[in-house]
Length: 216
Image 1 (tube, rainbow, N blue to C red):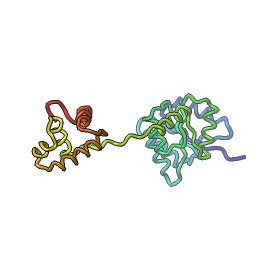
Image 2 (image 1 turned 180 degrees about the vertical axis):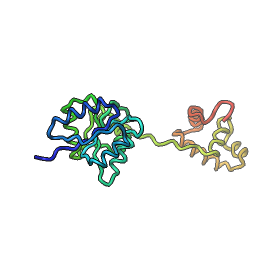
Image 3 (image 1 turned 180 degrees about the horizontal axis):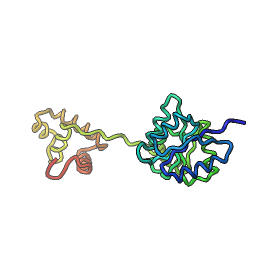
Image 4 (image 1 turned 90 degrees about the vertical axis):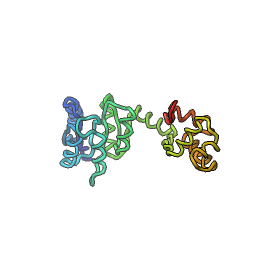
């Protein structure tokens, strides 16, 4: 018979911890080695009891779950962490997975699903609730938008003059630069704003607040 899975329960609500403990203590395949009410206590308890799996809530006072996950998986003897929370928003799911969580379940999961998930986590297998899996797949299928690169001061000056109706030659004279340099600045502006011409550049700049009526 294999050794029982050593489990540490982390949640800031005592009633939740009691319920989870009661769920596992009657199963010979598990040993609840400790409980913690926040991330900092979880780190202390994990170092002391060396659990196989940490069942981790995310939103807790003091050190939150995501921060604790990062410490636990980066330790010399890393621990597998299975998130058990009420929240499945991008703001909760993605940081937890990126921090190194082995799995992510919601608190409305049936007991049988939770038990299977803890066993799978102990084996190093990833377990995700259906809604979380769908959310992650959706993010993978959506092309990531490139980060916006800010316009330089000179590019803003050129664009401001263009917005006021100046030609490239007039803008060059006002800024004491060559007409070729103005064209180069405009090409950079087009690339950064994702447009192809002067009118679109001006419209995009107003839309993003880079230019304002009566000013820049």
